[in-house]
Image 1 (cartoon, rainbow, N blue to C red):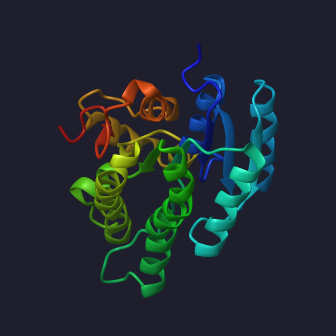
Image 2 (tube, one colour):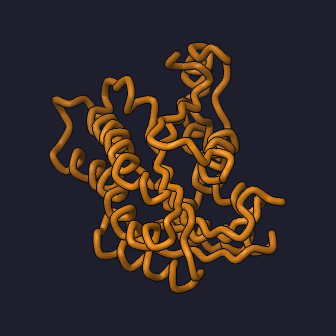
Length: 248
């Protein structure tokens, strides 16, 4: 029996990196997968075909979860197209790094809107469906930066710290209805984004991690699978660090 057999999962920001790995892992475990993408249209369409090849239903939606009305439309479409919604993974996120002295209001607002507002938007839109079912697993992607902060990332850290407080509050509010809400805090994960960075700098980051390597998107996906499945049926309101002991 596959861990997510017969369940419907929605993953935001899944055209590449961690989101893509989560979609692939969920499909391999029997989930029907809805996912969103925004700018990476070709990658989104390719992922949809790849997931369908695994024998599950898969639909990619070009949608911006940071837009309140668009998020409501997205949830309505997923429930209509799939007949249910069991797992919601809020993975969409951006960075606009810079020292606070030089950071513009626009850079701050944009990161808060995409990273934090989108979590509010999708969860608010999905709550009615989850409450009707008296079940649901919500997983929000935060970051170790949301726990410890990081120079040059005040906007990103604020958005990711906000996700932690929001996650714990949702877990308290919705727990009596059988709805769980958890967060995952990845550390240094090696994706297409990090592959474009200077190798010497990347190696310094690896050396500073107790496990002496960066994480893989699949390793974050496996932690997400645990929180999405019934294996974690009594786990809620938690932040699971996937960071190779970076913050231990």
